[in-house]
Length: 308
Image 1 (cartoon, rainbow, N blue to C red):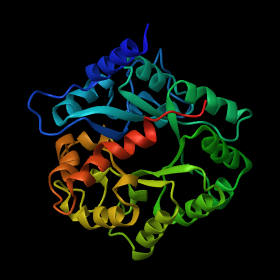
Image 2 (image 1 turned 90 degrees about the vertical axis):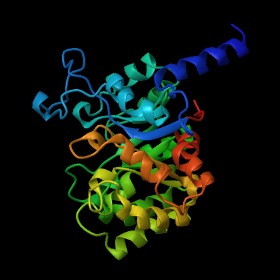
Image 3 (image 1 turned 135 degrees about the vertical axis):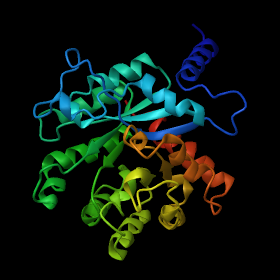
Image 4 (image 1 turned 30 degrees about the vertical axis):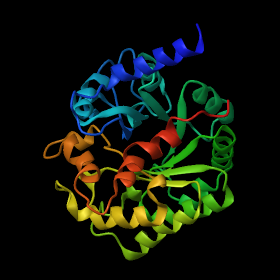
């Protein structure tokens, strides 16, 4: 098969996943943060400590996702490994293979396990472009981030030219800042504005700590999870100052929009209002800003070649 034909088939496959509706304004957008799972727990067992009743909604498959993203012009998606499966990334990887060209992936690995670097390499060969880190039940955040396993994870991510993706609360920002100093070659993507505004108005110190990360050239922020931040009410215009400050500090080339589905389509919220905040409702965002935040940044970070 020649290169031209391979490129044509790859492009065609990508278009089948989230094809734009005819006449849609703009488009070719990327949703940088979505979780999927299946009710088929026989084929894809839940991790220890999770029950079927924990899966809310009971099902959120790619097909269910496409019903929300297609009408809004979203053609590619970054899948984030769901906690229900912990380090068994099988379902996410299978969905990536089933929909070639549509999905990138962020996996979960056990940084304390032997051979974590090779596990990461194997996952990157399968299309993974990031690794989620989350303190979980860790009581000492400093020990967690400063552990030998975490050092291996950050170093290996840099070697593979993929990303470390912290799901953190604002109190962890100074530690992430320190890790960025120690591992300046590691690309970092902070989820959901580091959850500023999830538990009340953002503290000035927390906002300064988030914006301080902008001095690290390989650090990015997801403008996402609007349903959970600020007033938690659409159209989410109360989040405009936060979006603007992050855009100003990092530049649009290091900010990416994401929905955090399926939680964004829970009661009282919908997919349209999430993407519309960035695409339609903030007059301080230029068309170039929107193009970066809705496609360019995520494309560069999660859909580029890795070093494997």
